Image (cartoon, rainbow, N blue to C red):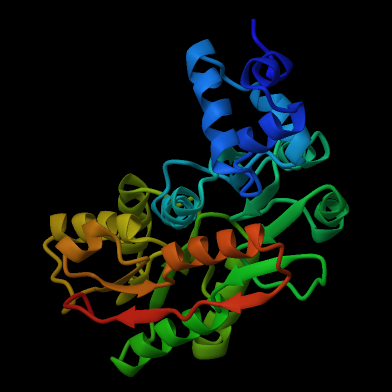
Length: 316
């Protein structure tokens, strides 16, 4: 099998010139580039990717840690990363963890093993103290705010968005307001929405918080728990438009009118929510993913906030 020494000999150039041609180095004369490329084509030569990566000291591949790859919110973040990666010629490796701390650390170890140039963490299960040591092996960008100097972050102000959503419902006359979350109080996002609830409404009735909600079926389960109880809420803030759609579907099966009998707000402005005219809190996650990628390949430790927006439709 031919190697770059064979190509150099047949093309009448040095090995370093062949290397520069393979790495698209601009400092090669056009005549030599043509001569080398002609021999490469004749030999049907394909460079060893691992060897090229070692020479460049980069893989042009990044990892995206995400707990699930069938969740609309995380899919939007990934979509943003892919938008930029295609433009910049990078490959993306999706690293699902199911919020397993050990699995997350195993993914981060890929930086130490030089398998990736950097990693974007869309949502984490480990504390910062466990994550920070890996920054010495490669770039890490997170999709939540942190003031740590070794981490860049692209984020939105979730707490402010939760407060605004609850205040909107209260301004429409709602005091009995429930909400759903994906995880329990071990999640930073869940802690923020509980804090926002306390800020707007005061004490949180335990029955008004339903966890483990990811899909439309979960939304139906949540609605069943909420609407079959004695203290029915008059409004629900769902942690995703698919979950909100499940709540809408179950409420409709009971003959309840939206929004007259039950107001509903979802999240992330997803197609199902648009189709059902659901109000939504759009955290603009595609833009967050795009910005996270830009920070990563730019090796930037900047803290970039992406503005959220509340889209009011017929459901409130």
